[in-house]
Image (cartoon, rainbow over all chains, first blue to last red):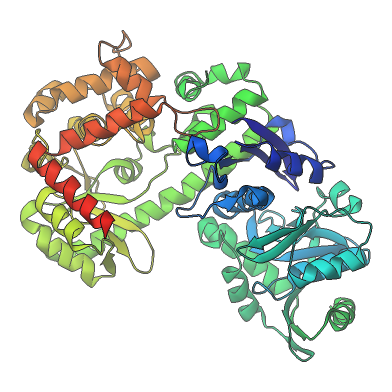
Length: 286
Length: 331
């Protein structure tokens, strides 16, 4: 491919190739403090390509490919090339990752212990993770938490934090000196702006953490909390995992172990101040 | 220019990976993944010194293939249970057959659909039994469905509604429209029992089927994997009676070509002497990948795509088929 970059996020190396310079230039800027793939050999490849040669120039539209692809993934305009690259990397993980049980969750760490937050899109898991990072927690990741079946530990995947719509202004105010990517408007998920994880998150991304608490946050409701039993947590986490079935017995054992040892709480919240206070309380009680 | 030769070299002579740099490893792994040979490669390279990242990626691929093997064998057992009450013996084909018999070809092999062979006279009963035990039709289009039933060598594909796994029920090994007509009765009559209620084709027929699939059917997609199967089958069980059997099925040319290509790429048997004439085109097509694992050599691929349709269908039927497909696209 014409342009390419290599980078490592947590334990996973990527090579991203593109028919255009622009998406690679943005990746190189935003991921400048990230290391190269271990031994120079990436785990996954991502391709950003034009379906027809002239579409590189004429109404350029970015198709997403890679080692693993799903049919009918819609192309994005070139201005959203960064989003295409991020989607491409997520897609490789979702479809191809077999070493770790992938949980669609955000995760932060304190004192060597991990807080996992999972829920539907819009539940606020990215925003909460970013706000906790602003308060000194270590960001483990905002999209995928990697559960290692061999150790039961959570490995980091601190890619760029994808902030959507109202969350963009919230985080710009909370972290005025942080590095942000370009504002991408009119994406399939509305406005998106990427936030670069802080230096601490990047420097320590190879250090796993033991799970301490699982939270199921829901934004937009009156404040409420309830205990979630291991059985329900198990089912909800299988639904939040893209490779649970593919991992078979290893995935079952890892998840069973996780839900037996880790308390879980559902947390409804009307605003982030309430949520952050509740997180502190639940964390200390867990 | 990088092509898939980096992969065939590594499979043929694993020691060659010692000279790969990170760039070379990256290309090798991407191409192996694209050709669905990464699990096979992992087995071939097992124990050799290599960079830690490569070892980690290959070990994940092997674990994944092992899980795939277990799932494939379970699926075969499910088919056996569905068809046993009718007295229909399940004859396993391709990947699942190699896994069930424990052949070398199955080491790390990725296994997709379950392919089985049943006598044509029992096809309707087999389909009814599968539908009654949880398999469902995938092809919603009446034209496609009819086309399969009239002209193909298999039922329209079925998927199990709980396990999400596809089964292809064959009654012979090439489309009925192909110019070559293998002897399906002989395939079934000479099949071998495995002792667990499942059967596989006889040794020479296994090679004939793999060669038919590779050379006489389709556009050589997945060709390197098919050819590796043939290489392993020949190395493990030999070629005794193969020429006679190939002649019986009308597959002499396909089998000879497959052996020449396997010899050329993998050093199979005593066929390593070289490739003749049109074999060069086959090699170009088989190796058409770039260093990212993407399909390369567009015109060569197109040529083989056109050829696959030419082989499968007489010209008038092909014209009708293309017209119907085109008209459907217009609507």
